[in-house]
Image 1: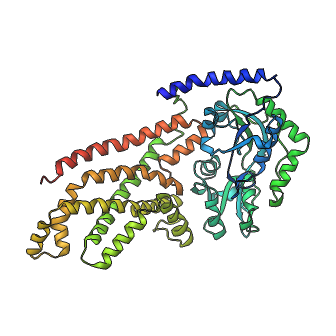
Image 2: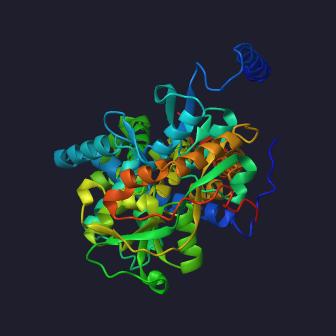
Image 3: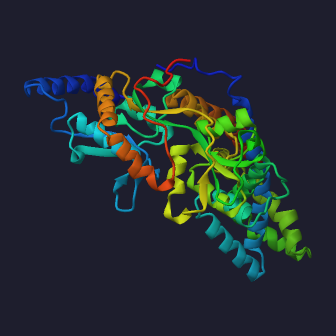
Length: 274
Length: 226
């Protein structure tokens, strides 16, 4: 507890000291010297993935790198942190990361806990099925055996609204064997995430998107609640869309999967109140 | 600092989730007590093949992380071999049975080792006297050694039970809707990991504390004074 008190005291002092030096440095861009820590997913191909060589790739990684660039940070100054879904709010609150770009859907509940910039992407919940299977309709979902990640918004929607027979696992990858093998009918989550799995080499040609728009998921950039960077990040996103970088990122990350996402959503178009 | 106003018991079936945890615990506890006793009997049996099997089983299963044991139950038994343990097409029912199977396979190794140490506390003269009376191995074990052994291992078995109660959270890995599963769901929806974590930690303490206290008293009452 003593340590806790000391750190509580130290935090504002440190913040004060940092602001003071920033001012002393002649103003200008916030991004000088130290770098920025960004939370991303490490296990979603096409979105945010760390490969065996600790190289990062994916749409969220490209977007985050662009935004950091606009805030004045070189790619070399970025530290990537893994942001598991359940930890995202805490990581921002504790200050472990400066921002989170991790297929983070903007919802009213989350908007009370963290500040959102964006949205920068509009995804829909969809089904990933075996290429040999018949494409299901929204009405036939109730007859399917689906697979998803336990507790996720997509899993809950399937049970509550469609009454589907649902197998929950900890990761999406655990579902794929069952689908290829035939004991499961479909994996369900956001289409952008599914597209990444469909494009993976080991499943090439075996999996395909059903193309059902079951929900609207507006991906936003998560920032600490008291952050003064929301406007700056929003401007960066607008620039990214205007100068064609957004289209390039989409083409690079989703091009090979045949997935064509919606055009970039307007800033502030996500519902943040119930 | 902690704000529990988000908690809506109509939306989140908190008691249902903990009830599932209790069901998992009770079913697995009974199963592991039986299978653990069989394993312990094998390990002290005069038949070398049985002793070898018991030792091998315990040293393998005990050292595999429980998550892998339970995920293997779903991925290998259910998906590859299509063994559903007679659960029919209902996925929730199948997963519950698979989770209990995995928990029993794992927990019984600890029950067995606790019980074996209990058998060691029974003076060797007891078994020798029983054999001199003409009882065979099963009778010696069933009538003389195990009853005394059980009485001396109530406290260690209480530890195993508490560990088992908390280990049931691993069943979340294959989608059994127990307490930890609901916890993840609530964190996803409400974005309040701290409050929700405190809530579920308290729930588990409410489950394990009384069983620990009760079994502790029982252990003192039953212990064979030597």
